[in-house]
Length: 302
Image (cartoon, rainbow, N blue to C red; front, side, top):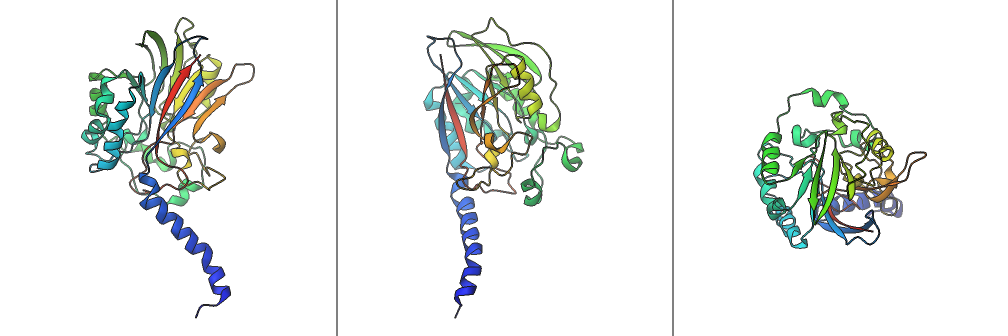
């Protein structure tokens, strides 16, 4: 018969196993719509609704996730912003296009993340939990880009979404001219930043990146972008209840691993920044704890 001491010693392991089982069996599929109001338009402007999608990491056969994603079209957003890591399998491009469904007929912009270029590999969870902000860890990104990213790019642009990989562009949405700047994935050091200021004649200027590295956030804040959208962090993915994220997988602080925050460099007005916790995981770590998969509806107001 177990003693009180043995039960006490076993309790943390039992609790940990129960938490992991909950994260793997339930929370990773508990898709959630977040909502934030962001005061970035001119006073008196009518609201603009932006659906922020990130880190879907789609696999063939993920029917529940695909159905939930398709249902987001019922929100009738004015704009869709996709901050990358759409796929997690060599054959997943058709699955993600099916999942986005009617959202592809709405005005939209996108950038890619590392998993749009490189197929996922099995890694030690401890390497991730050690955190760190380095890119191209272990030369993982020196291998050939094997994912169907060009197929995705063509599919998105053929439906009218703007590719913002290291480029500026603009889009008229609900009668407002939106000026965008985007970068290719900073986690891969693919980003090419310039010193062009935000277009003052636009109704709103928005920066779009996959990974929220500080060099990107700082540059866009100094350049006068009122709104910046990013993903990549998975919100920490394995979080401590009541504490939050342990890591961000970049040099952003864990306090801002997900959600709506501000970013400011000395001498400049703060930019609003939304970091999506994303919708998926690596197929080799299909678990979330205290960090549900999410999409976000941002209502931009005066």
